Image (cartoon, rainbow, N blue to C red):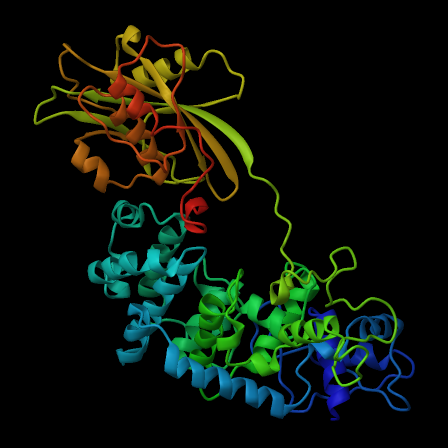
Length: 548
């Protein structure tokens, strides 16, 4: 098969990712006038299909006499230029060699990499990779290292995790965000132990099909790193690398563009070192080919990078030393707008350089919600001061975590005081309503919700200690609170409460809080304290702060 035909076949497969495979499809192809059916050559790189069925792609019907195409395929070929593809084996081989040589020299020493390299038991190795990949989703490496180390110390095997309680998992995961990840890890470990004989599935397809919470990327990462399967992976870092190397400016969130990126990743993955190659691609995106201010001079594949070539051409054109030169390759589709180029509505910005790629996906703003929450404390409880926590439902946002008693509010709701007091009494019995004080507010941004907490405090002074609580509630000491399975948002709420107690001056410039006005004139010390609590937009870590 010629290189031109191979490229057309890959494009055809990308356009129709769900086409039937086998005799049914061949009968359909044969029924269309002027078309012949032929199997794909075994030497062609095979892109992964959208369902993760490794090793199979839709058949590409070649035709004689000028490579005639159906109208839909003609439009597709005309709208994607070969400029964005790797068109020969030499270029692919060069990319692999340069990237892996750099990775061998420069890779970071990370605990999950050491485990994967040193562990000879395949199931333990796959488990170690699985935990790391799940933790690293939407979370910075620096944040994950400590969580990963503690997790593997507590549950070094699948069997250990399978026997853990959900409460233990949530407690260790607290603060890492996207809490369903920890729950699904535990569920997956239980399935492996109880239904799969303690053995991890060995391929990307079976990993994705059998394990809860394991998607296409995670399955590919486990299969390539732990089992040596030659399957490509695409995460945010790889998207950035591929879009720049091949000057793909179209929205990577688009289904067709996403499938093309997966096809490129599958074409590039080194069959001799698939795990190292995939980690190298991610490492390049994380350390050099960064979203802002990429380090192009240190990039091992700079000579193969279309985006860098574009920057050089623009710079030389600006100095009129290369104006109109035919020696610089660029995208030139025969007709129409190339589907992979920057959209005409977002032309090349010289000030951005290679950061023109990839195009930033448009995101919906998080929906806004309001809640009233109260820190209820017994300062003279037996064994020391205690605060009341209640458990969230087993499903939904922050499922199974503990929080201060709260009620959901409409933004303009005027009866939040009464609604919150009623909620408190349902957990702790009759309470002195006059002691309920509004302390301020906390704004916390989850992945899809901007939640404003109206923070209240109520201290049970001079009352008999509450010694019994209904199911789903518990009284904890302050020390126990800080190690409990509570969200980052609740820790912010508690900092507001602590800052308003006599004799304390605890707070955080990072807490998104405001203190209500209209109180009696405050002391100089209180004014200093209040300066810590200005209404701010979320300032947590750039990625992990919204990951709950």
